[in-house]
Image 1 (tube, one colour):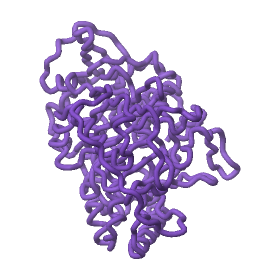
Image 2 (tube, one colour; image 1 turned 30 degrees about the vertical axis):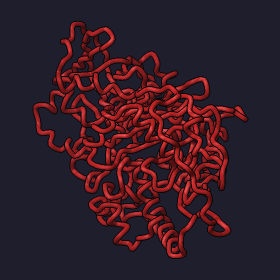
Image 3 (cartoon, one colour; image 1 turned 90 degrees about the horizontal axis):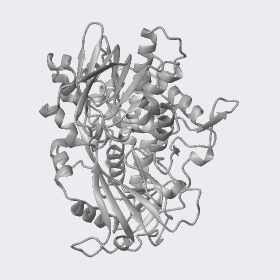
Image 4 (tube, helix red, strand yellow; image 1 turned 90 degrees about the vertical axis):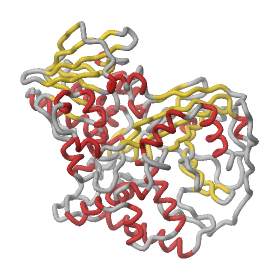
Length: 543
């Protein structure tokens, strides 16, 4: 979801509207569905070591482990520089990582990341890629990008269901007091201050990529404090404002504001300044399949370099080479690649299971990397729910005080008008207890239980939702994204984890401390540029 605009123009507050009714409990769903997810059963073979030894060997100069946005971005940069001797290895049957997508007879739809905000000036690699893909059509005389209109999120972009009616925007306006509104304005002023602030080192207070942010001690010190404590210390005690802050943290980071550092919390709001011309900083670029559209475009360019259904279970670094052992579950065989260099574009929690150097040295710092579990569901509907009081259906639809983040409408960007059917993509970060306990709950809960949970939630604004569903799939992300806890973003563990070895380069969004498209791409391109420089291959930096 996008960075939220804080104050919406409004003639006044509106009254509480109709109260929705709940669906009746049913023992069996009259629609089909299944549980999908990352191949955790195969991945757990890493821990157990139950894979056959490699029996075949071949040579590839550069191996990229991981076919998510970081790995694909590394391949994109190598390919652009004219270096084609690389291979991307992906555990799953499809590339994309948490930008994967699905498709049915109604529409493509996302299984994870589903938008990219207007890229900031510093997000040079994003702008370069978007120029190449036709997302950016050119630039104005003042240097502002001109975007292909069909990729800009159509209006209405977002709405909130609160007190029985839908309102435009996500900052609560229904039933709030003047004191709440005063705190909204004060927080908006605080964000504006940080957006315009530069540290003594001349850098922006909060920047994307995050490594370009100011290193002033008073700014970095915010990382030691939780976002909830920061808001409390600043006198922000408005209930609807705090709900909104907590929603924002669950949305982007997969954890509550009590578990997010104040630096990461303010970065969410103050780092976005890419608004161009009439576009707001909160405007987003999106597609029916979400960021899967970007994955599709990169797949077209890199298809000959990609090997899927490939579990890398051992990486051994020697003085002059790196060996990469791969298990192919469909064939039940293992092979070995001998490489000059490896880009490890996977989450850090896998390092100690795969890389021999990590097995023989202290990896205590890796325990600081904690990952948020998520559930994503796609509901195919026979028709749209009945329009009720307030703002009409938007791309992003949020329910106040829900455990979920609501849903996005996959067909919102469709060029086909008057579609009778649609697909709702429902997002639920599991933030109730510890990540480990919530991950176990995610994996142990049945499809029927999840379907009941989702429909009960959506029945608050849409009482007829149960009768509209024709198919409901749920996707389980056990390690969806790293959690930017207090002390983590600018702590020793993250910095140490980003250190490369002689022939091993690390590239993943968790090296930035939080998971957004720009950071994933930055880490992949950075690793690729290290290798291009090492090989003395001429290139123009994208960073």
